[in-house]
Image (cartoon, rainbow, N blue to C red; front, side):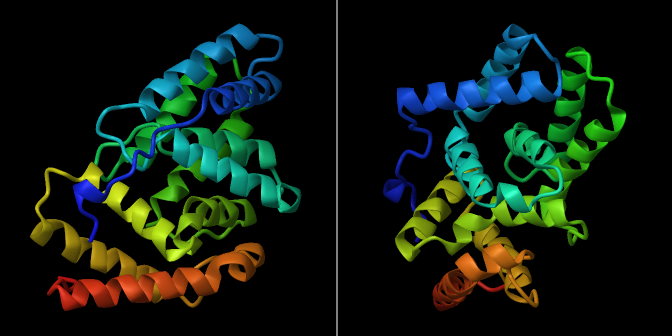
Length: 234
């Protein structure tokens, strides 16, 4: 399971999709951060695309952001501050070094730097986005509604059909190519079991209804498969 040879390319997005994403980001950034400066928003978008296109990425790519935005669009009307969540989604994996514990914090700082350079003066709005980015480290339980939505969106791929779920697992495994299986899989089992032990996998009713059962079935099936291969939580 999760072998490099099984890995589809997760970074391929059609040209029209790239254009649509760019148009969407520029409108969002111009509307919320630097009014009437779309050229500056284009520069920031291009920098984000460079981050998500780094050679070591297979799952945490622009394709993941596209998926998150599609899920965002399903629930946008239920959010308190959808603009903050949408910006946070664009930035939440901008910094990604496999195994690092501070990716989300550094991604939040990147947003802070870019928004400051763009002339944003709304410190409250900036802090909201900062907090939303950091909560996607999945080490703390989200307490605010918008925090719950962004966490659920980030993990919504756990509720995909099994073959797609395994595909994503292949991509994440490929990002940790410097780790051997005996290093990688016990930690992965630990993470999966922590998710499994939640009272509910998802925090919002929408995602519970849409993906909860499939996500739990996927996790249980994967843990059983890894146990059969001799991998247990350390």
